[in-house]
Amino acid sequence: MYADRITSLPPYLFAAIDRAKENAIKNGVDVIDLGVGDPDMPTPPHIIDALHRSAQNPERHRYPSYTGMLSFREAASGWYKKTFNVSLDPASEVLALIGSKEGLAHIPLAFLNPGDIALVPDPAYPVYKIGTIFAGGVPHIMPLSAENGFLPDLDAIPDDVAGRARLIFLNYPNNPTAAVADPSFFREVVDFAHEHDIIVVHDNPYSEMTFDGYRAPSLLSTPGAMEVGIEMHSLSKTYNMTGWRIGFALGNAEILSGLGKIKTNIDSGAFEAVQEAGITALTGPQDCIADMRRVYTKRRALLLRGLHALGIDAAAPKATFYVWAPVPDGYTSISFADELLDKRGIVATPGVGFGEYGEGYVRFSMTSSTDRIQEAVERMHEL
Ligand SMILES: *Cc1c(COP(=O)(O)O)cnc(C)c1O
Image 1 (tube, rainbow, N blue to C red):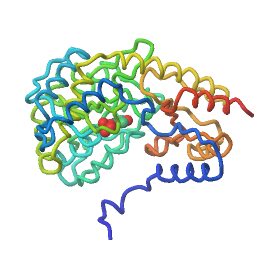
Image 2 (cartoon, rainbow, N blue to C red; image 1 turned 45 degrees about the horizontal axis):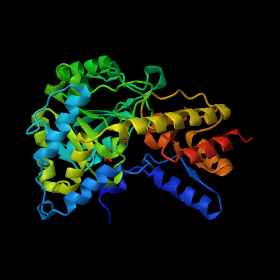
Image 3 (cartoon, protein in one colour; image 1 turned 45 degrees about the vertical axis):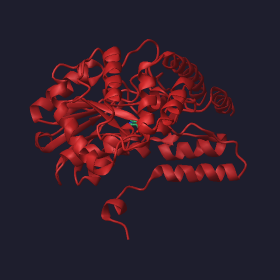
């Protein structure tokens, strides 16, 4: 009944986790979910007010423009200037997205012919690989390992593979490993992309979710990056707006135009009232970001204390709301996640759900309330 692209999908591990969680709840377990990467905190009220106001305006009820409202793209480029000191032309170097997942899933359709290669990290957000496969492309896996700071080793990519590659996907600060990249890594990437004529797609939804004074760089600050790359941002994590479906891509105008051609033929843009709320998020008071950092800093300290009690030596992440924890000896990522759920009622995501190189790790997400994380930590201390 289904097309090959559906039937050839790897089994969706997250569905199995959901089932196990539902089962535990049915059996009366008070489950604490540290599995999902979806902020528990609400969207700040001034952004919700902006949606209310904008939704009253009948002008906003019609089809949006495919590229996004110019006012939204100006807000995005202004935010980018303020945050990274990179100047972009809102008319040609910014494109509105219905969440960055949408842009990531669509970009392979614009640049891959059947059989073309996309370089895809593993472990990773699954969309890079699946979007490549849906477009008829061939993912070439770049393993991320602790020894290499969870950065891909570009020198390990065979020349013939690099020669056939059209796209490289990257994501720092990283989900699921919480690793960060410094500007010298981006310089290496940009050189590699120039040398092999590859488009760099940097997925950057966690740039503002940083701790201890760390600031995440933008790919586009790298000299030469504008010639070969784009970056995707999202309001989902920065402003607790996952359900609103709004993000943007910025960078090379020709690359964005290719993505725009796909979008023109598939979707009809983001609701303009949501774009106007997005403008308020990007241009309004930013104390909500400082508040968010304080909350996650506190949760991070709690969670690390609990993990140490379990004998897990996890590093404190500089960014993201994840802790990527090596499983104790004798476990696989799945058996350890199962045991956490069975013995302690805690859901964590087995690393293997993000690709084969995620084996040996589980991902804890700090997106339950601080009280619930406190409760999880107490359970971790129980023998
Ligand atoms: C959450 C997340 C996204 C998706 O963001 P949306 O804008 O909500 O689609 C993209 N990439 C990574 C790595 C994420 O963790």
